Image (cartoon, rainbow, N blue to C red; front, side, top):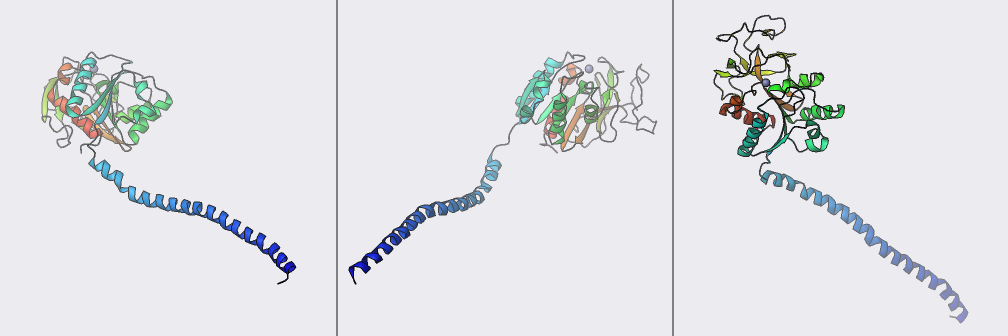
Length: 304
Ligand SMILES: [Zn+2]
C-alpha cells in the first residue's frame, strides 16, 4: 500500500474508532443507571407485594387497644353537685376496665380535629350552650356520623337548645322534671334483651330526679328503660307532668311514654343516653356503673 493511501485511511478510521468508543463508553455509563432504575421499580413492586400482609399480621398479634374516652362535665347552665364525684367514678371505672379516661370541663378544647383522632367515645354530662364554633359543631357531628361513640348522661339533654342538630342527635330535649331528686320513682326495663341494660331488674324503685322530654325522636330512639306510669304507685298528678310523650296521633300513655334510657345509631356511630345520673346514690349503684361500662363498650363497638 502506498504511504499516502495509508495516511488517508488512517485519517478516516482513527476518528471513527474514537467516536464509536466514546459512544460505547457513554452507553456503558448510562445503561447501568437505566437498568438500575427499572430494577428498583420492580424491586419496589415485589417488596410491596411481599410486605402487604405483614401489617395485618402485626395488627392481629398486637394486644387490643384500650377504649379512649373523654368525659366532658362543662356546665353553662345548671351545675350539678354530683359532677366531681361522677368524674372520680368514671376514672375508677376506666382503671378497672382498661379505658383511657380524659376528663374535661372545657369542651371547646376537646372538639378539635387533632384531638378527636384520639377519642373513641365522647361522654357528656353538660348543661347550656357550650361555646363551640360552627366548625366544631360540624366536627362533632362528623365524629359520630363517621363511626365513633357518644354517650349523654342526665343533663346532656339540657344542652345546646339553640342547636337543633344536637337535639336530633341525642334524641330529645329536657322538658322539666316533675319528679325531683328526693322523689321515689318506679323504673321499668322496657327492652329485656339489649346487652347494655339487661342486667337491670324488670321493675325497680329508686330515688332520683326524673326528666320528661320534648322533641323526643320516637322514630330513631330505641327505648330501653322508662318511668313506669302504669302499675305504679307513683303520684301521676304531680305539677308539671305533661304526659304528652305518646306517639303522635296516639293519645294513650304508653309504657315508653316517659323514656329514661335509650340508644340509637347516627350514620356509622352509636349513641346511648341515660337520664339517670342526678343523685350520688345512683352513681354509686353497681348496676348503674355496669350500665355505664357496657354503654362505653357498646358505643365503642366492642360489645354487641
Ligand atoms: Zn339533675
